Figure 1 (spheres, rainbow, N blue to C red):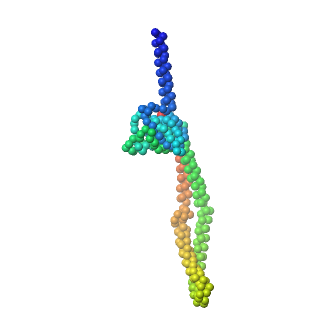
Figure 2 (figure 1 turned 120 degrees about the vertical axis):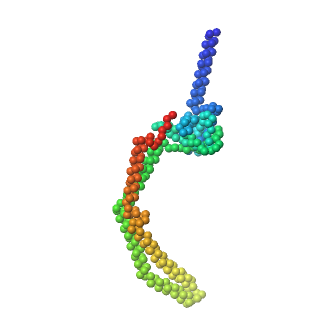
Figure 3 (figure 1 turned 135 degrees about the vertical axis):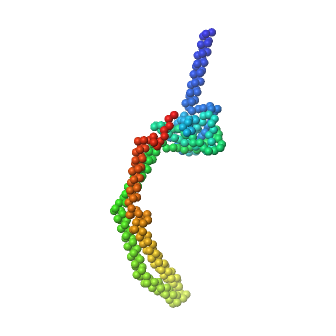
Length: 295
């Protein structure tokens, strides 16, 4: 009788151990009984570093974990098992974040403002938040770009480049001045030439009406009109170009300030120095810029 009682006790212990082992395996694999919560599906462009069983949180409070992941329409569909019966409002977003120095991943839920609650199996959008190493790499890349820009600006703003640019503007002014003087000095001759061409076209029309010279007359008239318009355009161009270059040489406008004021170069170099200092501070004191969460 005593022997049978011992067998019963041993059987109960073995059965209880198997049940506990089964429940433990289910817990490690991220499974939950349907009555203990509900499922949401978040879609991400990238889930690098995320694994099954990683936590799901709201404002740092664990509310579930990642149950499964699969490819779906060129995105990654992540099943999020939400524990309990606390409903999440419509418009909620899942954000993939990093925690700890090693960059362990977790999914944080940003609650929406909808009046209705999400139902079991409903899909929500997912966003990816870069981790600390990616931020440092991005800042370093921006710093390198700014250094390249500052180097280019330095080459554009040195004394020799300024002198060459000033000389080019002076040469253009000189050329336009010569064109303007040429037009002014020969304005009377141009007018006479145009008048002579017009008279010639009329005379040719009277010589042989109805013959082949009729085809020449319209061409000569158009040529005289085009010549008059060209002369007028040249005068306007020289005046406009001169009015454009005068303020530049006086240090007015963007180009004039670039030639006369070195503050742009000084500001760019100051920005590069500040960015280098920020990058160095991020590397030395990451906790100031990245909040780590340890469960």
